[in-house]
Length: 260
Image 1 (cartoon, rainbow, N blue to C red):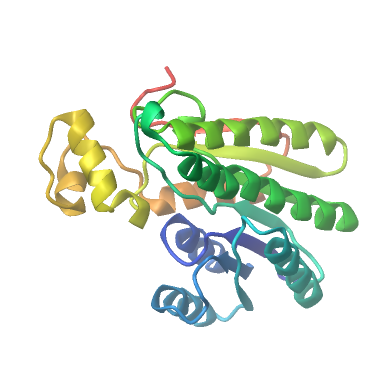
Image 2: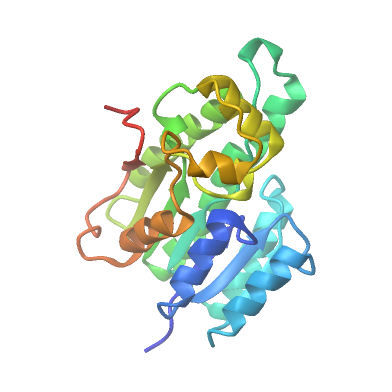
């Protein structure tokens, strides 16, 4: 039986890295895309870990804000594997600041990666999957796609847009054996959550004085998801019989009860 493939954007570190390792452990060949160069330390490390598992790995430098780069990524993936079973649109960035202090450049950059980048990934994923007659598209949104979050206006705008994209594409692909769903986690233990800017944001909203990510994660009031927890949800959506009828859904992974 042919091995299945999964393409993951933002795959060199954080959640994307966890997705890649989780799927590789379960027999998938991996296509990784990241804005980092493939010879960067983080990218080299995950490529080596994946290759050690024995499957095929295609790694590309790809900025999802570029149509040319995304088109080239999918062309290379199709040329090598002749199939795309699962595509996880994970690439993203976080921009913090009060709504009235955000600049055009900040908002445009956030939308270009998080929203338009997800649309580009979905666009070329859908073309490949229509060609083969099946597939699973999984968009990584956020709990911020379902509720307002202090100082996250640009991020919320982009992630709410992903929900609209997910539901629209799911309708357009209805009856074609291709599902499209969005996973909406609360904060995850990734490099995006470990920047000085994000820790300062947490201190501001919680009234704490965390000096670093280790202190922040250790506090029982901060309930960050492990990346592998999100990976398990993606794998369930991609492979389980129970998820076979789900499409156009936003799936909260909400440790804070924000959507209650």
